[in-house]
Image 1 (cartoon, rainbow, N blue to C red):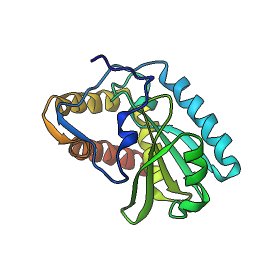
Image 2 (cartoon, rainbow, N blue to C red):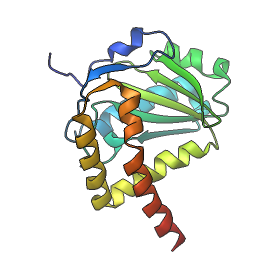
Image 3 (spheres, rainbow, N blue to C red):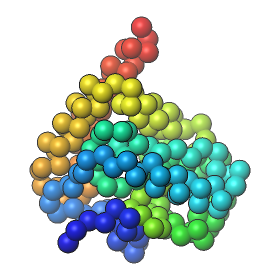
Image 4 (spheres, helix red, strand yellow):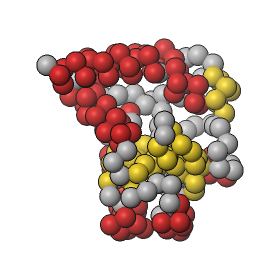
Length: 192
């Protein structure tokens, strides 16, 4: 079966908080210049659904870094006033075609993940002011500005993707070592 990056993800039919199974290797593809356009179309849909409740909408993750290979899934960061207040935004996102897949606390921060309409995407929702927002956006911006770290990250991802995984989160967790290595350089340069 050929992957279609414009097709919605089959995960939308799963119950909330069901882990995504891989049962094999993770598929990575070369950077697709269509990803920013795909993001923008979804960002417009999110802003239309939530209005000023969408405090921040940003393209994040590997598909937001030109030249970086990625899983063919557009990651979007959305900040709302209080991500734990589902009634304030979940019904409107669902009416716009998004499906809640994860409802959790992540390092003490309320975090929601939706799958989306039209394309394979993960919409990550955090509360405004969460340190997770800066962590994700700072890492994205660093990789955009530092091709040597972008390439180091790509190399680690390629190596890890070739291994067999039961769940997608295991692959994501395995990237922590290289992410921490790059983050340490970011922090060192910021202090200098």
